[in-house]
Length: 347
Ligand SMILES: NC(=O)c1ccc[n+]([C@@H]2O[C@H](COP(=O)([O-])OP(=O)(O)OC[C@H]3O[C@@H](n4cnc5c(N)ncnc54)[C@H](O)[C@@H]3O)[C@@H](O)[C@H]2O)c1
Image 1 (cartoon, rainbow, N blue to C red):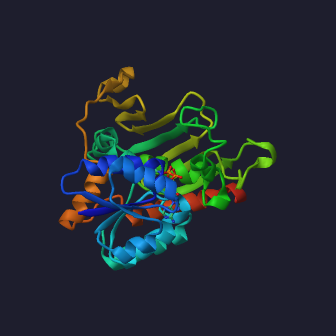
Image 2: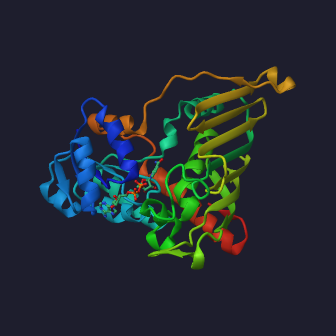
C-alpha cells in the first residue's frame, strides 16, 4: 500500500512512526502548505515526494491511500478531492467542523466505495475494547450509569509547549480557525470512549460549555480566543442508562487523562488511560458486596493505523468509519445548541 501524509505538523509524526512499522506500507509522499515544516518532516522521515498543495499530489497520483493530519477546518476541503480520485482515507478527528460537512464526506466516501476511517485514537486502548466485550457479554448486567471524563491541562501547564505562541495550540482556541474548542477537539474522543465502552449510543444530550478569559482582549495575533475550553454534559443512552461526560483544558495536574466508569446491575468497570499507561479494573460478582476492585489484565489490540492498512490491503472496511464519526458530530453540534437554548435535545 502506497501512502501519503497530508499535513506534517505535530500529530503527523505519530502517524508516520506507526505506519512505518506496518509490513506492506510504503510512505511515498507528504503534503503541507508550509514549506519549512514539510522539508523538516520529510528529511526526518526520509520521505521522497514533497508537495506544497494537495492538487500537486493528486496530479502525480502514484499512491493508494492517504492519512489526513491537517487541522480540523482542512479535513473537509482536502478529503473530498481525495475521495473523488478514489483514494482510501484515514482522516483525523473530528471528521469535520459540523455534521453537515461530516455527512457530505461520509456520503462521498460511501459512493466512492473506498476505505474510510477516522482516527479515534483511544480505540487503540486494549482495556476499552475489553470493557466493551464484557458489557456486551453481559458480565456486568444491564448498564444503568456511566461517568466519563477527558482531562488536559495545556492551558495551565507548559509541558506540551506554550499555547500563547504556538500556532498548533492557538488554532484550537479559535472558532474562526475552524475549532469547536475542547468539545470538538477531545469531546469527540470522550463521547466515543463512553458510548463504545458502554456499547450503547447517545440518545439525548444537554451540555454547558465555557470559554474562560485567557489573554488581553481575548486575542493573540490573528487568533480570536473564542472557542470553548471546558464542558460538562448529561446524556441519555439508547439502552436507557444515564451518563455524565465532561472535559477541560484547565484540569490542572492532568496532562492527558481519560476515565470511563460503567455501572451495571451486577458489576462495575473502570478504564483509565493516561501518559502513565492504561488500566481496566472491575468490581464483579461477590466483590460487589465489599466494593472490591481488581485489575483485569488485557493483551494489546491492533491500532487504528494497523486496521486501516489491513482494510486497504484486504479490501474490507473497518471501524470507526466516517459514518460513525458523522453521527458523533451530530451530538457535538446539538451540544452547542443546548448551551444556547438551555434545554435537552434528542440526537
Ligand atoms: N487522534 C488524536 O489523538 C489526535 C491528537 C492530536 C491531533 N489530532 C488531530 O490531528 C489534526 C492535526 O493536528 P496537529 O496537532 O498535528 O496540528 P498542527 O497545526 O501541528 O499541524 C497541521 C499541519 O497541517 C498543515 N496544513 C494546514 N492546511 C493544510 C492543507 N490544506 N494541506 C496540507 N497541509 C495543511 C499545517 O501547515 C500544519 O503543518 C487535527 O485535526 C487534530 O484534531 C488528533
